[in-house]
Length: 410
Image 1: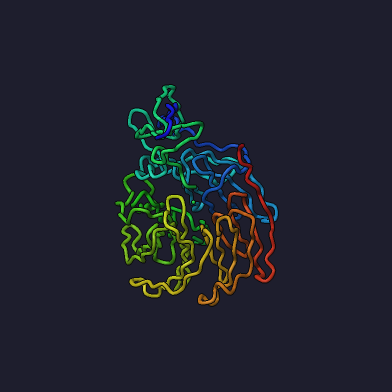
Image 2: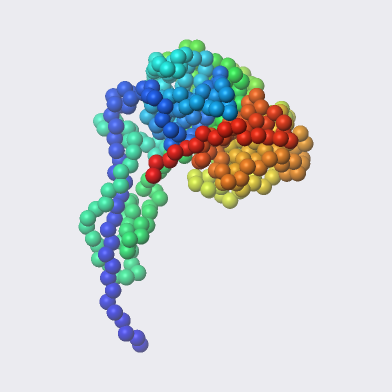
């Protein structure tokens, strides 16, 4: 027998209230503004000496990169709900929640929206947004705390299907209550990073929309010319075009599509791996795939896989190399660039794919790397710390050219 004391604890709870923006307001919000500091990082695209850096859900920074040693932050194109972009000719294409926006950038100083395909994307809710016909689109979530207090016995907890409970000043978050966006394939003359959900092939734009692939002929842009969606699989994340094929990175594998008839892409095969995030780049007979754990990717695998794709109908894994937490990657000739998360940027000589781990030529630690575009001996890498650029014309003497920092809000 022992003495017992009455014990009660007070609990309050909060939840995330959707914030709606009307369709009219969203569709009149695209505009060019003076340059603003980089505040976050997202997808990247390089074309004609301009580097376009997406600021997730906000818009696109335009960087004059004609001199990589001194990049100039020229302007910012405000595009609400923008997470991906490509540039073809003088036109920039970006998502804007459910719409595809077309912006004329023939004169960067007077960039202007010239076209919009409304309601193209239905899978945008994977970013945590959704639409209500009468209210508009959910563009944010605002935390609300309810004032009522529930007194319960110590050791007990009041359950609630949504929201966050606060007990003794500690927030117990219900992860299902709030989804946040995840901020993110060289094809000359315009090239995207390996994290892109958009891909250009000749006159066609391919886009991931939830579990589906969209294909649009840019020569005849219009709502009546959007090809029927092709279901790929849930968990698809990235696109990499190579010759007449499209390589789709997914959380459970890599899908290979034939896009020789771009209006009717067809699936050739699927290479399956453990559940992980999965960007991919392709060169010759090999696909280079990074797998990482964490966030929505689940799993515990962090590695580089070398897949032999000489037979597209039967891709085979040849080599596996352990990494820390690899994100985007890029390849130029024998140089392979891997953004290994908080382990920085790693550069390998991959002339012999069976000995990649023995041929690390450079490792830039102390930076949080996300994605990279190597082109014409300049590697443009974006990450938590900003834009870094490296001269790799001599792999035995790689040089840092510049650093454009991200100035996060505090």
